Length: 390
Ligand code: ADP
Image 1 (tube, rainbow, N blue to C red):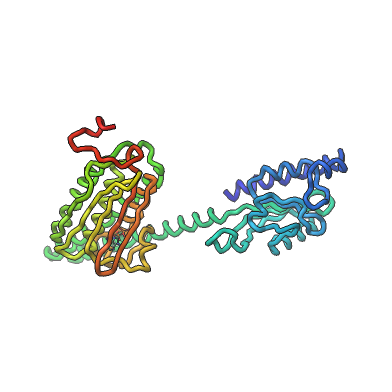
Image 2 (cartoon, rainbow, N blue to C red; image 1 turned 120 degrees about the horizontal axis):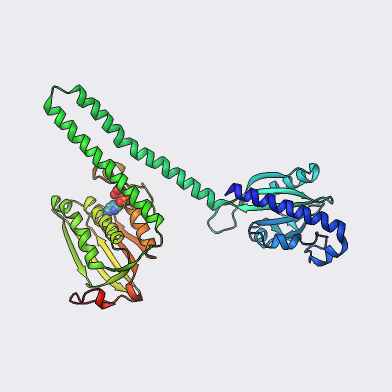
């Protein structure tokens, strides 16, 4: 991306230089009149048209640092006000370029112009334009690219860390088993723990694969009509063993026969994660309720538990990858820290959303809101096959 900006900027600088010299030779006086210069000074013919089609911010300064031409992006970003270049760093760069005629590249941060954004990071390229002290400044907003890079770096670091823990534990356990070769009871105990760590590694890899598959498939490539009842049934079946082990009742309720437009595997995956969490973070002998209701052009599926709940300050972070309120507890329950990130992406892939209500000590309710099949949430009587009910 940086390369392409540099290449584009290089091309533009070259093209403008050619235009400038040609116009100096051909028709310098006609040039000023034809270009509709903002501040009254002359701009080589054609330069304004080139700048107008550039996606990045472009500014031409005259020999006295006054702005001769600024693209609307440059003004929108606050780089230019009136006939002044606002970023002091950029102005200093332009003066250096005017002095020695050398093209310069740099990165600058400018106090944010978008709501909630502290600074905007620009890749800039500054070049002399002709022999009258004019300078061309090209600046590309790369804040979003920077943010995505940082998220990717964090993710790779997190994955490495998460993988290291079970792999390290398995390596230690293997050594211990070697040392305990003549104690069959110890060997069996440590082998069991090795199996546990291998299972943990397996969950993590499965969740990583699911997450990357969903992220790569937004929006869903081949959507179809999905029966909510069947998806809930599939998810509950998956979680039953774990729920029974804790004597937790999995109860369904609400409107039957609703359908959404989407991917049944993904919906089952999302519901499975929500129900699995509800069971994992609830005490024994409680209830988890999965209920469905039509909501205009959407269907709402909620999963409620009577569990430990989530502290208010953690609520806005729980959908982040690898965020856990209590890392030790999550690991003890076999959590990978990716379940809710998967749910969030499944919702997004369906053009829906997921929300949470929770109170510490009382329980949590996660609600998936997904677009209904056919634009309105209408229940299909169970006796009519889905295909026939189109
Ligand atoms: P994990 O694999 O750790 O469960 P998730 O992404 O599924 O990862 O959830 C992130 C964190 O959100 C969990 O570690 C837990 O702290 C919290 N959490 C998720 N669901 C519930 C719930 N039903 N009740 C209480 N806490 C929950």
